[in-house]
Image: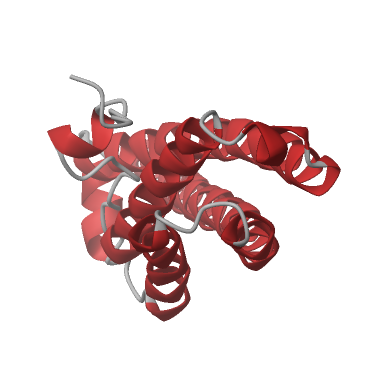
Length: 186
């Protein structure tokens, strides 16, 4: 009789370990997929950057530094090897692109340029998708991190070496600020 109870307990423990392991694998794969989605959207955004820079170049002769920042952000993103580096390049690009669109207000011919308007519209759409993808990624990271850290799943996570993941965050308070554009007015 006792052997059946012990056998039943062992079966329940093994079933829980299998369930927890599979759940952790599923969560880890969801995090990887969500990060991949962000990366795909950033690729789309950065593929538009050279077109945007070329369209804007002829109009914005005095904003060379701003255009170089956008190009540098693209380069940083392409060379990023960690989530933090990727987020840093993303933040730099987002700030620079916001500034370009703010400065474009000073160039009526640029604002009326059909190519610029199409690129701007496409970038706005991509920015919205990137924001959603970041939220989804961070939600999946939160779920995984909770599972890896909460008892009793943390025991299975430690046994099979599951790790917590980093959130995709804005790096600094400065990156959170809206860019200020001054046209030489006091």
